Image (cartoon, rainbow, N blue to C red):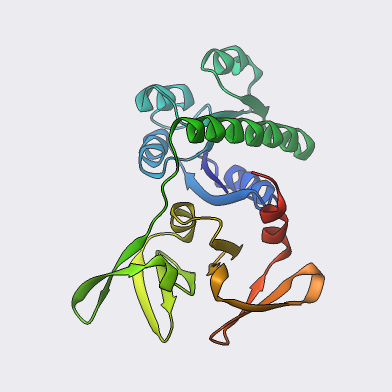
Length: 240
């Protein structure tokens, strides 16, 4: 899944870009920033794969925001602006694309497809250089004590705002974080994201049943029933 940051000082513009992104099954976390300094801080803390960056913002503009983050750049940039005269500077800044407001849906889709291809290439290159290591245990707290939960004992996990609920048999542990970040640290051969708020341990699946609108009902060994949505089924069927 691709992590995205939308940096724009106009809330309606951010909402429009978010709506476009939410229609794509390969998009995961979507974060927003309203001005340059906030965008720079978000880039450093969230490590997005793709940034939609407004050229004109209060404080740092889009180009100054990129300069403040520095090199090497671990993300791709698509500039957003209402003015054509910034196109040359955008490509000098090695932007992946340059979208004029109001953003046309078809033009946005073409830019997003190109961005997804570049994100995939970057990840493939990184994976070739560094063998991927996945979590073997998760630090949790219970009754005032800390312990390590082996990931094979995790039945399923669910998102609860800024927290993750880890369900292991009859016990539920709460840790701070996002489901997207946890999913990226778990072996995809064993764990599967089935919707925006839940992931499962495939070894804990008892059976699957056809459900409405192309979805699947997943029944775990403990009897818990969850829904594998059509969007996440489509994403998991894509190679790579």
